Amino acid sequence: MSGLEDQLASYLAHRMPQARDVIVGNLARIHGGSSQETYRYEASWTEQGTDKGGKFILRRAPEAGLVNAEHDLEYSVYSALDGCNIPIPKAHFLELDPAWLERPFFIMDMAPGKPGDFYGSDDPYDGQSERVGERFWTHLGTLAAIDTNDREVSMLRGKCDPRPVHERELDHWEQRLGEGEDVVEPLLRAAIRWMRRNPPPPPKKLAVVHGDYRSGNFLFTPDGEISAILDWEMCHLGDPLEDIAWALDPFWSMERHFPLEAGLGLWERASGMTIDRDALDWWRLFAAIKCSAIWTTAEKSFEEGTSDELVLALTVLRAGPYHRRVVLDAMEKRGVMG
Image (cartoon, rainbow, N blue to C red; front, side, top):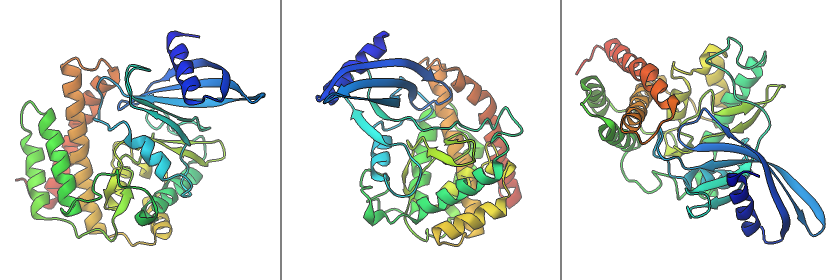
């Protein structure tokens, strides 16, 4: 076993006192994400004379990333949503003590399937775009329909916040934007001012919002089923239209592979709600502002040397200007530039 494998085996033996002969192998980094380090590995052990084991995922806090994730939040979301008819991996252990693996981490099952290659392929879902699209929108509607009174969601941002949902989210991401900016972006500030003057109606319900629901953040299997929805670090309570808008952002929109109106219809049927199209437009502009704040954080992390992840640099070069263009187009469409 490698050094990290040895450390992980020691930790598992500590957390599973009934286990004997714990072995960890085939540990490998999964690249592509930027908010946490992700590794896959296999583990085997003996328990009361029975051989046990499986394939697992280790999610460890990075030194820096695109999002300042609360590293216990994702684990808590997986636990809270277990059994709610949404495909998520089973979470096993959360460890906040850095003594074990240098930084906080959690462990969950490894789900079957793979992410869609939506940047590098014209057929990212291997001929199953229709089925994947159906499941994508239905699962998002199912998430919006969850009764938050039936789930332990007290850890989610927005649970006890008295501010209107749109105001709270604008405040949150404007603060993030300011923390990452070296120079104030006049275009983004003008858009935020307009959004504050022209708020959307209150949400039809306070829903669990994934926060990063999009192509690339789920796994699919050869039959077109979605086997796991991943990356819940930005989960919070809010307007379910926020997730729809994020999924429709042109940088990664599912609309390229599944008809928009069909997808929104599936969402409405699964959620039991009707989409206010004017409100959705507001949240689509918000999505571009939020993206811009994330890219700004990424740029600062790379420039200050707190991260050497190449994906951060590539993201800044491509996505930063792209979303400023999205914001500009949206503002021009509304005839408002300040």
